[in-house]
Length: 101
Image 1: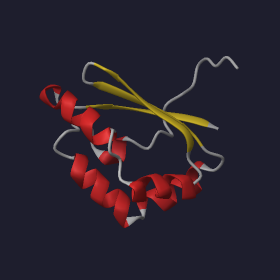
Image 2 (image 1 turned 90 degrees about the vertical axis):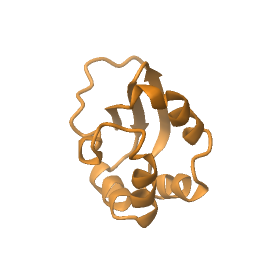
Image 3 (image 1 turned 180 degrees about the vertical axis):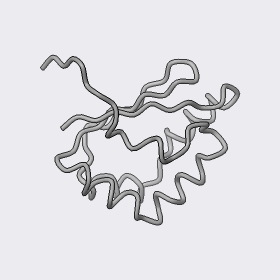
Image 4 (image 1 turned 180 degrees about the horizontal axis):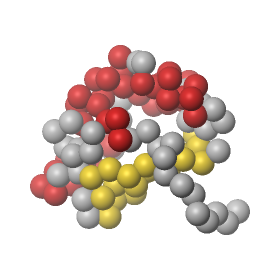
């Protein structure tokens, strides 16, 4: 299944957001893979961030990610850059309206 999310970053922090995502922690990448997340991309349009990712079992993936200490630390690390609250970033409420394989 395909999922997406939208969040907003602070305008003055665009470069910092990019910098931090060029150096995503290896432990976080490992966690995402263990949770079954694949084909994960993040796109930026001004202060708007759009993420796209795939997984077979959303509940399982979010359970693993949201209960992990490494995710908690990453969310804290990003909290000075991101405006959107973590509870609004689950991705399960964004409706796909078109897809072309």
